[in-house]
Amino acid sequence: MEAGANKFMLQEEVTSYLAENGKDGFNAVNFLERYNLPLNFEGLVSDMIAGM
Image (tube, rainbow, N blue to C red):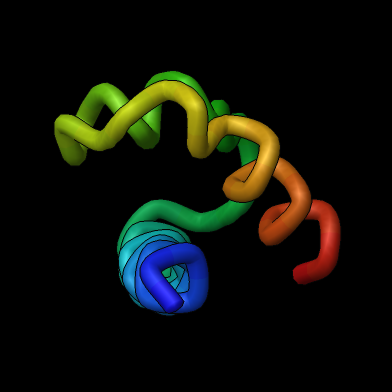
């Protein structure tokens, strides 16, 4: 259940970030560090961006 909540939260943050900054030059690690999120979400964030 927690994994689903994390995925939802990340999806919302990524969508918000992309709306403000665009997809060009997106870096998952920089995104996670900017929002002070664990770096172990890097793969999930990268997959989200690839699917957009």
